Length: 289
Image (cartoon, rainbow, N blue to C red):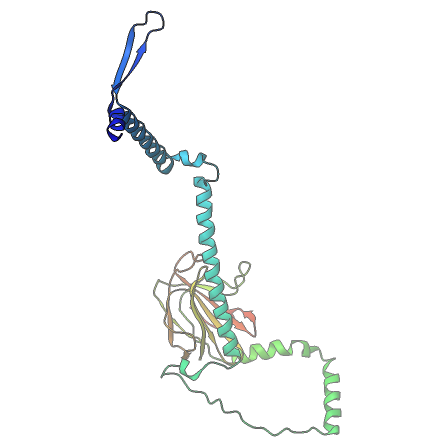
């Protein structure tokens, strides 16, 4: 039985092509059923490989329904890049806010300071409560009522701020030419001082570093919390030399100037001065020349 099946597979067959009018033989081909199966299989395999190659390595794949075009893939990559940048910016912002909250709440751990830092005693001082007399309360109410009609009382808070800052000596963070002054454009809450790349940047007063990170728009940024609710900010540095929680003294080197960040157009230092959350014009208190 097996020999009979084998003989059928190896039996030669002839395929011929004849002319319609003269019955002249135009083409003939002799092959066995086994060779016919092999030819069909090989041809099918070659066809599959060819189609796969055309789809994988040519632009024909863009005509397949559901397959993204080159422009769509470019937009997806751009969206992935932007999403990653936004996520990184959010992490940096959350860390900055957390650091500011810790500094303002006086919750910086002792181990965060280095050996050069000044240790501040955190032992609370017990003060007995002083009770005011009735006469004292009446006199205080009279004084406050009189002050309400005093013309100079409206600007007393601002005058006190200016007087307090003028009594301080603020070190210039760098010496150079002011390339852009405070408020020259919307949102420009500081001054741009043109200096060579790598210029030493110093702290304007004693304080504690509350931010020292890289940001997309302003590059390497360092911010210092000083006494009397004063904060100084130094942007577009090429390198920051102090970590968050480090105590620095006036005139101490904290960074090297540079041209970092998307908003920078050349080597300079962008310096900001904030008092109780309000921006100040640094040129009113510091000489940069």
